[in-house]
Length: 511
Image (cartoon, rainbow, N blue to C red; front, side, top):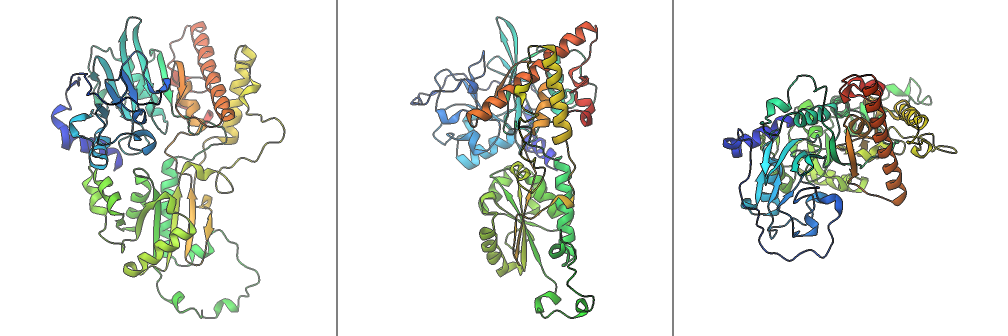
Protein backbone atom coordinates (compact mmCIF):
# COMPACT_ATOMS: atom_id res chain seq x y z
CA UNK A 1 0.00 0.00 0.00
CA UNK A 2 2.78 2.44 0.83
CA UNK A 3 4.40 2.15 -2.58
CA UNK A 4 1.19 3.60 -4.02
CA UNK A 5 1.05 6.51 -1.58
CA UNK A 6 3.63 8.67 -3.34
CA UNK A 7 1.89 8.46 -6.71
CA UNK A 8 -1.61 8.93 -5.29
CA UNK A 9 -0.56 11.96 -3.32
CA UNK A 10 1.10 13.57 -6.31
CA UNK A 11 -1.86 12.87 -8.57
CA UNK A 12 -4.20 14.55 -6.10
CA UNK A 13 -2.13 17.69 -5.67
CA UNK A 14 -0.43 18.42 -8.99
CA UNK A 15 -1.64 15.90 -11.54
CA UNK A 16 -1.62 18.53 -14.27
CA UNK A 17 2.18 18.68 -14.15
CA UNK A 18 2.87 14.96 -14.24
CA UNK A 19 3.50 14.91 -17.98
CA UNK A 20 5.89 17.85 -18.03
CA UNK A 21 9.57 16.87 -18.38
CA UNK A 22 10.79 20.27 -17.11
CA UNK A 23 10.25 22.18 -13.92
CA UNK A 24 11.37 25.74 -13.39
CA UNK A 25 8.69 27.75 -11.65
CA UNK A 26 10.62 30.70 -10.33
CA UNK A 27 13.59 32.93 -10.93
CA UNK A 28 16.75 32.01 -9.00
CA UNK A 29 16.79 35.16 -6.90
CA UNK A 30 16.58 34.50 -3.16
CA UNK A 31 15.20 37.05 -0.71
CA UNK A 32 17.85 38.60 1.56
CA UNK A 33 18.33 36.86 4.89
CA UNK A 34 21.20 36.82 7.39
CA UNK A 35 23.85 34.33 6.41
CA UNK A 36 24.71 31.47 8.68
CA UNK A 37 27.82 31.78 10.80
CA UNK A 38 28.41 28.05 10.35
CA UNK A 39 30.44 27.15 7.25
CA UNK A 40 28.75 24.85 4.77
CA UNK A 41 30.50 21.44 4.57
CA UNK A 42 31.66 20.44 1.10
CA UNK A 43 29.50 17.31 1.06
CA UNK A 44 26.35 19.45 1.35
CA UNK A 45 26.99 21.27 -1.95
CA UNK A 46 26.52 19.46 -5.23
CA UNK A 47 29.52 19.94 -7.58
CA UNK A 48 29.07 22.16 -10.65
CA UNK A 49 25.73 23.42 -9.33
CA UNK A 50 24.27 26.13 -7.12
CA UNK A 51 22.35 23.45 -5.19
CA UNK A 52 22.60 22.10 -1.65
CA UNK A 53 21.11 18.91 -0.22
CA UNK A 54 19.78 18.60 3.37
CA UNK A 55 21.69 21.71 4.42
CA UNK A 56 19.03 23.83 6.13
CA UNK A 57 20.79 24.17 9.47
CA UNK A 58 23.42 26.30 7.76
CA UNK A 59 20.87 28.97 6.96
CA UNK A 60 20.60 30.84 3.68
CA UNK A 61 23.69 30.12 1.58
CA UNK A 62 24.78 32.99 -0.65
CA UNK A 63 25.28 30.98 -3.83
CA UNK A 64 22.35 28.58 -3.43
CA UNK A 65 19.38 28.81 -5.78
CA UNK A 66 17.72 25.48 -4.83
CA UNK A 67 17.66 23.72 -1.46
CA UNK A 68 16.90 20.02 -1.90
CA UNK A 69 15.39 17.95 0.92
CA UNK A 70 15.63 14.17 0.58
CA UNK A 71 13.02 13.29 3.26
CA UNK A 72 11.21 14.51 6.33
CA UNK A 73 13.46 13.41 9.20
CA UNK A 74 14.69 16.07 11.59
CA UNK A 75 18.40 15.34 11.07
CA UNK A 76 17.84 16.30 7.43
CA UNK A 77 15.33 19.16 7.62
CA UNK A 78 16.82 20.69 10.80
CA UNK A 79 16.97 24.49 10.39
CA UNK A 80 14.01 24.61 8.02
CA UNK A 81 11.39 26.86 9.65
CA UNK A 82 8.51 29.09 8.60
CA UNK A 83 10.97 32.00 8.32
CA UNK A 84 13.20 30.19 5.80
CA UNK A 85 13.20 32.17 2.55
CA UNK A 86 14.96 29.78 0.18
CA UNK A 87 13.24 27.62 -2.43
CA UNK A 88 12.88 24.01 -1.29
CA UNK A 89 12.67 21.05 -3.70
CA UNK A 90 11.40 17.68 -2.51
CA UNK A 91 8.79 14.97 -3.15
CA UNK A 92 5.06 15.63 -2.82
CA UNK A 93 4.76 13.75 0.49
CA UNK A 94 7.72 15.63 1.96
CA UNK A 95 6.30 18.90 0.65
CA UNK A 96 3.01 18.20 2.44
CA UNK A 97 4.92 17.62 5.68
CA UNK A 98 7.09 20.73 5.29
CA UNK A 99 4.09 22.99 4.71
CA UNK A 100 1.75 21.49 7.31
CA UNK A 101 4.24 20.54 10.04
CA UNK A 102 6.81 23.34 9.75
CA UNK A 103 4.61 26.10 8.39
CA UNK A 104 6.87 26.91 5.43
CA UNK A 105 5.09 28.92 2.74
CA UNK A 106 3.74 26.71 -0.01
CA UNK A 107 5.05 29.25 -2.51
CA UNK A 108 8.61 28.29 -1.52
CA UNK A 109 8.10 24.51 -1.55
CA UNK A 110 8.27 22.81 -4.93
CA UNK A 111 7.19 19.17 -5.21
CA UNK A 112 8.86 17.39 -8.12
CA UNK A 113 7.15 14.33 -9.64
CA UNK A 114 8.65 10.93 -8.97
CA UNK A 115 10.57 9.01 -11.66
CA UNK A 116 10.44 12.00 -14.00
CA UNK A 117 13.38 14.02 -15.33
CA UNK A 118 12.82 17.70 -14.51
CA UNK A 119 14.80 20.82 -15.34
CA UNK A 120 15.73 22.95 -12.35
CA UNK A 121 17.80 26.00 -13.31
CA UNK A 122 19.35 24.14 -16.24
CA UNK A 123 20.14 20.96 -14.29
CA UNK A 124 18.31 17.70 -15.01
CA UNK A 125 16.91 16.29 -11.76
CA UNK A 126 15.18 12.93 -11.24
CA UNK A 127 13.69 11.59 -7.99
CA UNK A 128 13.36 7.84 -7.32
CA UNK A 129 11.96 6.09 -4.25
CA UNK A 130 14.70 5.64 -1.59
CA UNK A 131 12.98 2.73 0.22
CA UNK A 132 13.44 4.62 3.49
CA UNK A 133 10.35 6.41 4.80
CA UNK A 134 7.35 7.72 2.82
CA UNK A 135 8.45 10.56 0.57
CA UNK A 136 12.18 9.78 0.83
CA UNK A 137 14.04 10.08 -2.47
CA UNK A 138 17.34 9.31 -4.14
CA UNK A 139 18.26 12.27 -6.34
CA UNK A 140 19.95 11.88 -9.73
CA UNK A 141 21.50 15.15 -10.95
CA UNK A 142 22.72 15.47 -14.55
CA UNK A 143 24.67 18.70 -14.82
CA UNK A 144 25.81 20.23 -18.12
CA UNK A 145 29.30 21.70 -17.76
CA UNK A 146 32.28 22.75 -19.85
CA UNK A 147 33.84 19.35 -19.10
CA UNK A 148 30.74 17.56 -20.33
CA UNK A 149 27.77 16.09 -18.51
CA UNK A 150 28.43 15.55 -14.79
CA UNK A 151 26.32 12.81 -13.19
CA UNK A 152 25.65 12.93 -9.46
CA UNK A 153 23.67 10.51 -7.30
CA UNK A 154 22.67 11.58 -3.78
CA UNK A 155 21.12 8.68 -1.87
CA UNK A 156 19.81 10.66 1.10
CA UNK A 157 18.89 7.93 3.60
CA UNK A 158 18.06 4.71 1.76
CA UNK A 159 17.75 0.93 1.97
CA UNK A 160 19.67 -0.14 -1.11
CA UNK A 161 18.25 -2.67 -3.52
CA UNK A 162 18.89 -4.02 -7.00
CA UNK A 163 16.00 -1.89 -8.26
CA UNK A 164 17.86 1.27 -7.24
CA UNK A 165 20.87 0.39 -9.37
CA UNK A 166 18.74 -0.56 -12.35
CA UNK A 167 16.64 2.61 -12.12
CA UNK A 168 19.71 4.85 -11.89
CA UNK A 169 21.32 3.14 -14.87
CA UNK A 170 18.15 3.50 -16.92
CA UNK A 171 18.02 7.24 -16.16
CA UNK A 172 21.62 8.07 -17.05
CA UNK A 173 21.46 5.90 -20.19
CA UNK A 174 18.75 8.14 -21.70
CA UNK A 175 20.00 11.19 -23.55
CA UNK A 176 19.34 14.39 -21.61
CA UNK A 177 17.58 15.84 -24.64
CA UNK A 178 14.88 13.22 -24.18
CA UNK A 179 12.24 12.87 -21.49
CA UNK A 180 12.51 10.43 -18.62
CA UNK A 181 9.09 9.32 -17.41
CA UNK A 182 7.91 6.71 -14.88
CA UNK A 183 7.40 4.10 -17.60
CA UNK A 184 11.12 4.40 -18.42
CA UNK A 185 12.42 4.31 -14.84
CA UNK A 186 10.11 1.53 -13.63
CA UNK A 187 10.42 -0.53 -16.79
CA UNK A 188 10.80 -4.30 -16.54
CA UNK A 189 13.25 -4.25 -19.44
CA UNK A 190 16.85 -5.32 -18.89
CA UNK A 191 19.40 -2.83 -17.60
CA UNK A 192 21.49 -1.22 -20.38
CA UNK A 193 24.68 -3.17 -21.05
CA UNK A 194 26.75 -0.02 -21.49
CA UNK A 195 26.14 2.64 -18.85
CA UNK A 196 27.89 5.96 -18.27
CA UNK A 197 30.14 6.60 -15.30
CA UNK A 198 28.58 8.21 -12.24
CA UNK A 199 30.94 11.05 -11.35
CA UNK A 200 29.83 11.52 -7.73
CA UNK A 201 27.88 9.29 -5.35
CA UNK A 202 26.87 10.84 -2.02
CA UNK A 203 26.27 7.74 0.08
CA UNK A 204 24.28 7.04 3.24
CA UNK A 205 26.93 5.24 5.32
CA UNK A 206 24.95 4.84 8.55
CA UNK A 207 25.75 1.12 8.83
CA UNK A 208 29.01 0.86 6.92
CA UNK A 209 30.51 -1.83 9.14
CA UNK A 210 30.60 -5.56 8.35
CA UNK A 211 28.91 -6.46 11.63
CA UNK A 212 25.68 -4.81 10.52
CA UNK A 213 23.46 -7.37 8.87
CA UNK A 214 19.73 -6.94 8.43
CA UNK A 215 17.18 -9.42 7.16
CA UNK A 216 14.87 -8.36 4.35
CA UNK A 217 12.13 -5.98 5.50
CA UNK A 218 9.45 -8.28 4.12
CA UNK A 219 10.69 -11.16 6.30
CA UNK A 220 10.64 -9.01 9.42
CA UNK A 221 7.19 -7.59 8.73
CA UNK A 222 5.76 -11.03 7.99
CA UNK A 223 7.29 -12.60 11.11
CA UNK A 224 6.16 -9.85 13.48
CA UNK A 225 2.62 -9.82 12.06
CA UNK A 226 2.36 -13.61 12.35
CA UNK A 227 3.68 -13.46 15.91
CA UNK A 228 1.03 -10.90 16.86
CA UNK A 229 -1.67 -13.09 15.36
CA UNK A 230 -0.53 -16.08 17.44
CA UNK A 231 -0.39 -14.02 20.63
CA UNK A 232 -3.83 -12.61 19.94
CA UNK A 233 -5.47 -15.99 19.36
CA UNK A 234 -3.65 -18.08 21.97
CA UNK A 235 -3.28 -16.59 25.45
CA UNK A 236 -0.68 -19.22 26.38
CA UNK A 237 1.57 -18.53 23.39
CA UNK A 238 3.39 -15.48 24.77
CA UNK A 239 4.17 -16.81 28.30
CA UNK A 240 5.61 -20.00 26.79
CA UNK A 241 7.32 -18.32 23.84
CA UNK A 242 11.02 -19.16 23.73
CA UNK A 243 10.90 -21.25 26.92
CA UNK A 244 11.36 -24.99 27.36
CA UNK A 245 8.84 -26.93 29.48
CA UNK A 246 9.70 -26.91 33.17
CA UNK A 247 10.48 -30.50 34.21
CA UNK A 248 9.63 -29.66 37.85
CA UNK A 249 5.94 -29.25 36.93
CA UNK A 250 4.41 -32.70 37.21
CA UNK A 251 1.76 -33.93 34.79
CA UNK A 252 -0.67 -34.05 37.73
CA UNK A 253 -0.32 -30.41 38.79
CA UNK A 254 -0.90 -29.27 35.21
CA UNK A 255 -4.48 -30.50 35.61
CA UNK A 256 -5.10 -28.26 38.63
CA UNK A 257 -7.30 -25.23 37.84
CA UNK A 258 -5.59 -21.87 38.03
CA UNK A 259 -6.31 -19.75 41.07
CA UNK A 260 -5.85 -16.55 39.07
CA UNK A 261 -9.38 -15.41 38.04
CA UNK A 262 -7.99 -13.34 35.15
CA UNK A 263 -6.44 -16.37 33.48
CA UNK A 264 -9.79 -18.02 32.89
CA UNK A 265 -11.28 -15.17 30.93
CA UNK A 266 -10.26 -13.81 27.58
CA UNK A 267 -7.26 -11.51 27.82
CA UNK A 268 -6.97 -8.57 25.46
CA UNK A 269 -3.42 -7.82 24.36
CA UNK A 270 -2.34 -4.36 23.21
CA UNK A 271 0.28 -4.24 20.45
CA UNK A 272 2.53 -1.17 20.30
CA UNK A 273 5.02 -0.18 17.58
CA UNK A 274 7.69 2.47 18.07
CA UNK A 275 8.06 5.01 15.29
CA UNK A 276 9.72 8.28 14.35
CA UNK A 277 7.99 11.38 13.00
CA UNK A 278 7.57 9.45 9.78
CA UNK A 279 8.63 5.89 9.06
CA UNK A 280 7.92 2.26 10.11
CA UNK A 281 4.47 2.47 8.49
CA UNK A 282 4.83 -0.89 6.74
CA UNK A 283 5.19 -2.68 10.07
CA UNK A 284 2.24 -1.32 12.00
CA UNK A 285 -0.05 -1.42 8.95
CA UNK A 286 0.76 -5.10 8.40
CA UNK A 287 0.12 -5.93 12.07
CA UNK A 288 -3.25 -4.16 11.99
CA UNK A 289 -4.26 -5.93 8.78
CA UNK A 290 -3.35 -9.35 10.20
CA UNK A 291 -5.36 -8.69 13.35
CA UNK A 292 -8.24 -7.02 11.57
CA UNK A 293 -7.69 -4.12 13.96
CA UNK A 294 -7.56 -0.35 13.79
CA UNK A 295 -4.59 1.84 14.70
CA UNK A 296 -4.39 4.52 17.38
CA UNK A 297 -1.89 7.36 17.02
CA UNK A 298 -1.50 10.71 18.74
CA UNK A 299 -3.21 13.73 17.15
CA UNK A 300 0.18 15.02 15.95
CA UNK A 301 1.05 11.65 14.40
CA UNK A 302 -2.37 11.51 12.76
CA UNK A 303 -1.78 14.88 11.08
CA UNK A 304 1.56 13.57 9.84
CA UNK A 305 0.04 10.38 8.42
CA UNK A 306 -2.62 12.44 6.66
CA UNK A 307 0.23 14.13 4.77
CA UNK A 308 0.92 10.80 3.04
CA UNK A 309 -2.24 11.20 0.99
CA UNK A 310 -3.52 7.66 1.56
CA UNK A 311 -7.25 7.50 2.27
CA UNK A 312 -6.93 3.77 3.01
CA UNK A 313 -4.45 4.45 5.81
CA UNK A 314 -6.54 7.28 7.27
CA UNK A 315 -9.56 4.95 7.40
CA UNK A 316 -7.55 2.52 9.52
CA UNK A 317 -6.92 5.15 12.21
CA UNK A 318 -9.07 4.98 15.33
CA UNK A 319 -10.38 8.00 17.28
CA UNK A 320 -9.47 6.62 20.72
CA UNK A 321 -7.18 4.20 22.56
CA UNK A 322 -9.58 1.25 22.28
CA UNK A 323 -7.82 0.27 19.05
CA UNK A 324 -5.64 -2.83 19.48
CA UNK A 325 -2.59 -1.44 17.61
CA UNK A 326 -0.93 1.73 18.91
CA UNK A 327 1.96 3.74 17.47
CA UNK A 328 4.15 5.70 19.87
CA UNK A 329 7.45 7.55 19.85
CA UNK A 330 10.43 5.22 19.70
CA UNK A 331 11.83 6.71 22.92
CA UNK A 332 8.78 5.49 24.85
CA UNK A 333 9.32 1.82 24.00
CA UNK A 334 10.82 0.82 27.33
CA UNK A 335 9.50 -0.99 30.40
CA UNK A 336 8.46 2.16 32.25
CA UNK A 337 7.01 3.88 29.21
CA UNK A 338 4.97 0.84 28.17
CA UNK A 339 3.64 0.27 31.70
CA UNK A 340 2.42 3.86 31.75
CA UNK A 341 0.93 3.56 28.28
CA UNK A 342 -0.87 0.33 29.22
CA UNK A 343 -2.37 2.03 32.28
CA UNK A 344 -3.75 4.81 30.05
CA UNK A 345 -5.10 2.36 27.46
CA UNK A 346 -6.77 0.10 30.02
CA UNK A 347 -9.39 2.74 30.78
CA UNK A 348 -11.07 2.51 27.38
CA UNK A 349 -9.57 -0.62 25.84
CA UNK A 350 -9.71 -3.13 28.66
CA UNK A 351 -6.22 -4.40 27.88
CA UNK A 352 -4.54 -6.81 30.28
CA UNK A 353 -1.02 -6.69 28.81
CA UNK A 354 1.08 -5.01 26.14
CA UNK A 355 3.50 -6.41 23.57
CA UNK A 356 5.73 -3.69 22.13
CA UNK A 357 8.19 -3.64 19.23
CA UNK A 358 11.21 -1.41 18.74
CA UNK A 359 11.89 -1.60 14.98
CA UNK A 360 15.37 -0.26 14.22
CA UNK A 361 18.59 -1.38 12.62
CA UNK A 362 20.33 -0.99 15.96
CA UNK A 363 18.26 -3.95 17.21
CA UNK A 364 20.70 -6.28 15.43
CA UNK A 365 23.22 -5.87 18.27
CA UNK A 366 23.64 -7.65 21.60
CA UNK A 367 21.94 -11.02 22.03
CA UNK A 368 18.90 -10.11 20.01
CA UNK A 369 19.71 -10.78 16.39
CA UNK A 370 22.66 -11.28 14.06
CA UNK A 371 25.35 -10.14 16.48
CA UNK A 372 28.96 -11.01 15.68
CA UNK A 373 31.17 -12.18 18.57
CA UNK A 374 34.16 -10.01 19.35
CA UNK A 375 37.08 -11.19 17.17
CA UNK A 376 40.23 -12.55 18.75
CA UNK A 377 43.37 -10.99 17.35
CA UNK A 378 43.26 -9.19 13.97
CA UNK A 379 39.79 -8.93 12.50
CA UNK A 380 39.76 -10.93 9.24
CA UNK A 381 37.30 -8.38 7.85
CA UNK A 382 39.60 -5.44 8.48
CA UNK A 383 39.91 -3.66 5.11
CA UNK A 384 43.40 -2.54 6.10
CA UNK A 385 44.64 -6.08 5.39
CA UNK A 386 44.11 -5.55 1.67
CA UNK A 387 46.38 -3.49 -0.57
CA UNK A 388 44.18 -2.04 -3.30
CA UNK A 389 47.17 -1.02 -5.42
CA UNK A 390 48.17 -4.58 -6.29
CA UNK A 391 46.36 -7.40 -8.05
CA UNK A 392 46.93 -9.56 -4.97
CA UNK A 393 45.35 -6.80 -2.90
CA UNK A 394 42.36 -6.75 -5.23
CA UNK A 395 41.87 -10.50 -4.89
CA UNK A 396 42.30 -10.23 -1.14
CA UNK A 397 39.62 -7.53 -1.01
CA UNK A 398 37.22 -9.73 -2.94
CA UNK A 399 38.09 -12.58 -0.56
CA UNK A 400 37.31 -10.40 2.45
CA UNK A 401 33.96 -9.43 0.99
CA UNK A 402 33.21 -13.09 0.33
CA UNK A 403 34.01 -13.83 3.98
CA UNK A 404 31.62 -11.07 4.94
CA UNK A 405 28.97 -12.73 2.80
CA UNK A 406 29.40 -16.00 4.67
CA UNK A 407 29.68 -14.52 8.17
CA UNK A 408 27.32 -11.60 7.89
CA UNK A 409 25.43 -12.05 4.65
CA UNK A 410 21.72 -11.94 4.00
CA UNK A 411 19.68 -13.74 6.62
CA UNK A 412 16.11 -14.77 6.87
CA UNK A 413 13.98 -13.74 9.81
CA UNK A 414 11.25 -15.82 11.43
CA UNK A 415 9.25 -15.82 14.65
CA UNK A 416 12.01 -17.88 16.26
CA UNK A 417 14.41 -14.95 15.88
CA UNK A 418 12.30 -12.74 18.13
CA UNK A 419 13.82 -12.43 21.60
CA UNK A 420 12.42 -10.13 24.29
CA UNK A 421 14.60 -7.31 25.57
CA UNK A 422 12.53 -6.97 28.72
CA UNK A 423 9.41 -8.53 30.16
CA UNK A 424 7.15 -8.50 33.15
CA UNK A 425 3.74 -9.96 33.91
CA UNK A 426 2.08 -7.25 31.79
CA UNK A 427 4.78 -5.79 29.51
CA UNK A 428 6.95 -7.52 26.89
CA UNK A 429 9.28 -5.62 24.55
CA UNK A 430 10.90 -7.05 21.44
CA UNK A 431 13.71 -5.35 19.48
CA UNK A 432 13.14 -5.94 15.79
CA UNK A 433 15.89 -5.57 13.12
CA UNK A 434 13.60 -3.64 10.79
CA UNK A 435 16.00 -1.19 9.21
CA UNK A 436 15.23 1.59 6.77
CA UNK A 437 18.96 2.07 6.15
CA UNK A 438 21.26 -0.15 4.07
CA UNK A 439 23.28 -2.92 5.66
CA UNK A 440 26.98 -3.31 4.95
CA UNK A 441 26.22 -6.01 2.42
CA UNK A 442 23.66 -3.89 0.61
CA UNK A 443 26.03 -0.91 0.48
CA UNK A 444 28.74 -3.13 -1.02
CA UNK A 445 26.36 -4.30 -3.74
CA UNK A 446 25.18 -0.80 -4.50
CA UNK A 447 28.64 0.77 -4.80
CA UNK A 448 30.18 -2.15 -6.70
CA UNK A 449 27.32 -2.11 -9.20
CA UNK A 450 27.80 1.54 -10.15
CA UNK A 451 30.83 2.86 -11.99
CA UNK A 452 31.49 5.76 -9.62
CA UNK A 453 34.52 8.06 -9.82
CA UNK A 454 34.03 9.67 -6.40
CA UNK A 455 32.14 8.25 -3.41
CA UNK A 456 31.43 10.72 -0.62
CA UNK A 457 30.02 9.50 2.71
CA UNK A 458 27.27 11.61 4.26
CA UNK A 459 27.26 10.10 7.77
CA UNK A 460 30.16 10.59 10.16
CA UNK A 461 31.06 9.08 13.51
CA UNK A 462 34.29 8.61 15.45
CA UNK A 463 37.62 9.08 13.61
CA UNK A 464 38.33 5.34 13.76
CA UNK A 465 34.94 4.39 12.30
CA UNK A 466 35.20 7.11 9.66
CA UNK A 467 38.65 5.83 8.63
CA UNK A 468 37.42 2.24 8.37
CA UNK A 469 34.43 3.33 6.29
CA UNK A 470 36.69 5.32 3.95
CA UNK A 471 38.89 2.26 3.43
CA UNK A 472 35.93 0.08 2.51
CA UNK A 473 34.78 2.66 -0.01
CA UNK A 474 38.24 2.81 -1.58
CA UNK A 475 38.36 -0.97 -1.86
CA UNK A 476 34.96 -1.13 -3.51
CA UNK A 477 36.11 1.47 -6.03
CA UNK A 478 39.21 -0.65 -6.63
CA UNK A 479 37.04 -3.66 -7.37
CA UNK A 480 35.18 -1.62 -9.96
CA UNK A 481 38.44 -0.47 -11.57
CA UNK A 482 39.76 -4.04 -11.81
CA UNK A 483 36.43 -5.26 -13.14
CA UNK A 484 36.50 -2.62 -15.89
CA UNK A 485 40.01 -3.72 -16.85
CA UNK A 486 38.87 -7.34 -16.93
CA UNK A 487 35.85 -6.45 -19.06
CA UNK A 488 37.99 -4.50 -21.54
CA UNK A 489 40.53 -7.33 -21.72
CA UNK A 490 37.73 -9.76 -22.41
CA UNK A 491 36.30 -7.35 -24.99
CA UNK A 492 32.89 -7.84 -23.39
CA UNK A 493 30.06 -5.43 -22.81
CA UNK A 494 28.85 -6.64 -19.44
CA UNK A 495 26.57 -4.41 -17.38
CA UNK A 496 27.64 -3.67 -13.79
CA UNK A 497 24.73 -5.72 -12.50
CA UNK A 498 26.40 -8.80 -14.07
CA UNK A 499 29.60 -8.30 -12.08
CA UNK A 500 31.15 -11.80 -11.68
CA UNK A 501 31.76 -11.35 -7.95
CA UNK A 502 29.52 -8.58 -6.72
CA UNK A 503 26.78 -8.24 -9.30
CA UNK A 504 23.23 -7.77 -8.17
CA UNK A 505 21.89 -10.51 -10.42
CA UNK A 506 23.30 -13.17 -8.09
CA UNK A 507 22.51 -11.66 -4.71
CA UNK A 508 22.90 -14.95 -2.86
CA UNK A 509 26.56 -15.24 -3.86
CA UNK A 510 27.70 -11.78 -2.91
CA UNK A 511 28.11 -9.55 0.08
